[in-house]
Image (cartoon, rainbow, N blue to C red; front, side):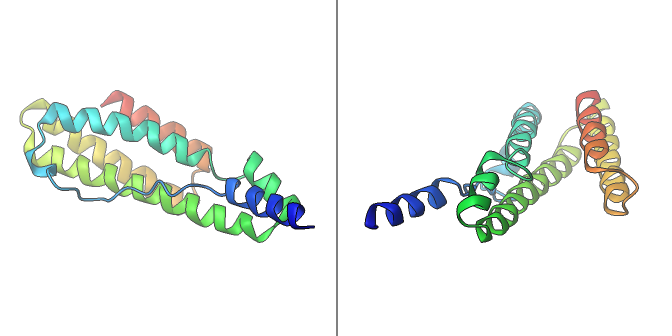
Amino acid sequence: MRIILLSLVAAIMTGCVSNKSIQTVQVGDEAKSCSQIQAELAQLGAIFEEVKDESGVTGKNIGLAIVFWPGIIVNEVRSNKNEDSVDDRITHLTGLYSRKCSGDEVENSKSLKDRLIELKGLFDQGLLTEDEYEIARKKAVEES
């Protein structure tokens, strides 16, 4: 019985989404160059996709549904927190880029920020599905 209980606890622990939240404002942000900000924004796009993939119907959530269904709620809450933190960091760095970088880069950054805000508003209003929002967001970032 003890082995079964330990196995159950291990399954629950390994089935949980890890905390991958990112601090919005970080030390040294103001000192970053335009190219460093662009590089971090590109990395954050990949991280966002990783944390997004931990939400919904996943192997972890299916496993939790079988052995401990309340764990699904914990996974979804943590996954949403991770997504929100990455999104907030992207917004912060986009604003920083707009303030620091000159010439055409500033115009592109401003239009990217405006486009991302517009897309988020459409998504929040229910005018875009999650898939449509993600496709449009990726396209806007790639075109900037």
